[in-house]
Image (cartoon, rainbow, N blue to C red; front, side, top):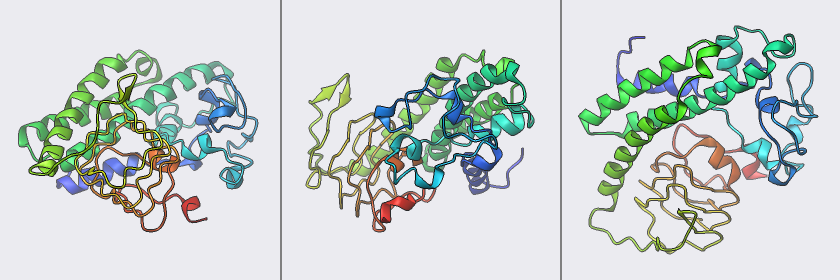
Length: 287
């Protein structure tokens, strides 16, 4: 597909990575393993439909998910993989009509979800990267990832997803280093990076309001229940950071990098929380 300019390509990428449950077959409600302790309705094996999934693939308690405290459901985001599998890979043939393809469709969905997540990060890297050489490399990687998403079902489940992910991660890391270095130039960063759990920065429950987090490397950090209210996270890399119950009220995330809707959905925020233009405020933040 030809694009007139960079902005047009970015917009098209993000458009295709937004969830559209109306065009899906409830794939997240059957393909995923559920644990009640992680905010899902019940303990459920992968491949088994959720007890709340109806025959029309709608959730019978969708409007009450937040009220019931089902954070696993409200947080989940497939990056548009569900409708891609349903309408493109299987061309409208659902698992409920054909039990023979049910398992394969679940497997394909899990692969597609990973590819679409990579595309989300690459789209942002494409948007913020200023190094022309790396920018061109990202563009080629986006095209290759998009090509993979249009493979047939048999080919999709046989992709070496880890090999492709390594290539993507390399580009994301290069982009992160460039963006963060510009943000932290000449400023003092007081973030203590010594406390880690399994190699990930442990900031569980900490009050970070007086810490300079501009351009901070928060990749994979445990920020569960951390107090980030009113903080400026401009240029901070939040890829893979655990934001469950983190207080983002009044925080500025408008120019942070590699944060997803799924992460935002797990946090606490308000109308004063500034988000990147590609993300939206969860409706339940203001309740």
